[in-house]
Amino acid sequence: MGLSAERLREGLDAVAAREPAIAAAIARVGYPTPRQRATGYRTLLRTIVGQQVSVASADAVWRKLEAELGPDMAADALLERDFDALRACGLSRQKQGYARSLCELVTAGTLDLDALPQDDEEAIAQLTRIKGIGRWSAEIYLLFAEGRPDIWPAGDLAVQAGLARLFSLAERPDEKTTRALAEAWRPHRGALAIFTWHCYDNPAL
Image (tube, rainbow, N blue to C red; front, top):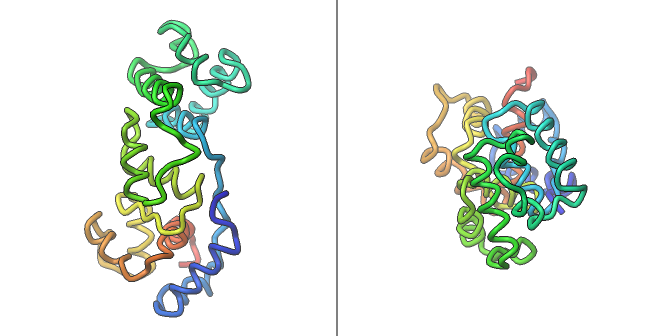
């Protein structure tokens, strides 16, 4: 799953053929490395755990959760734990609410992560039913876990900043402008999103 190196290259080459700035940037910094995650509940739970904390803190909480819930980290196992048990793992009250929302939807069968709608907007709508999963988190899941080729997280600050560098813009574009700029890149916007992250802090640009 995920956008492979080959698919990234194909998508970027298709856009670069029409966008000289993209072609020039590829020549200077090369193609990005694929970013692939597993599909399913665990990846979304990991997203919730990682919200608004450092990578090191999120890793520590995740290890405690694995120890508490077992290596499978089953959704029903999390639902069986009380507040204090999850708090001891490092989950705040708010994040416990988010995690329970995810687990309840999964165990009830009302969110089937193996059969999300093929339409991207419909899939985003399904994922954002989970408390704590907003549009950005849903887009990131669909891009990295499912490898959907045309996901464009226009609200991502690094995507916006990367575009500003690529096109020598006077300032970082807002979400509306970022979305509009990428319309011409359909259906390869996912590859471009990953490329903007690749370019965001690259000293060669």
